[in-house]
Image (tube, rainbow, N blue to C red; front, side, top):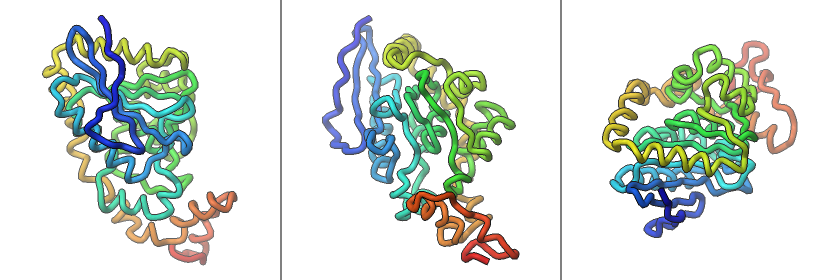
Length: 284
């Protein structure tokens, strides 16, 4: 089997995502969506998410495409989650209350998705990787969540689904303790399908794409929907628990403390807002 070269999809003019397609001479093609902010460890903004959503929608509806690859530009990071400057400027609030989380666009895509992870997959980068149907990791990959560390009140199905992937105990450990896991640890817990040397990632992805494209595409789409059907029951939960448990989180003190500490290069002091039984808006 022979592949055409990757070629950018000219119908779209993207600035924070690279969108490409290639085809096998035996039939069928692959689409590749690349986070293209390497200077920010491929952290995303709402603009990145909109471009990613457009690319996934196109790939999902292109009958010549049988598989989608999600990856990050460069070798240092797959995706490091939301850009901290964007989050501090209200990006998290907008994502929670005014838009879909980026995971939803992966779920809405009918084609199998392969995450090709080099370097850091942290925060949203990690949960985007485990939402893909398959995850291929380079031997330099590092996985982990940041929510409680950076005061990002992630909730709902993006968290609960991890229990399906690695089990409840490890999922709680990952989300609640914000630990980091290297590629071999991720393989052992079932977070990734395979680990390969950094310089072999593209070769491995190509093999998996060929294997997918050799199978009946309609059957694969039905299987993907069947495996993901339990997610559909949880989708409406995103943002609901945060709004119930902490309705003023984004205006409160301990929510802003993480961003202030990051930009001031100091350790955050979240507990100053709980002393003396105080709330979350001002120090007690």
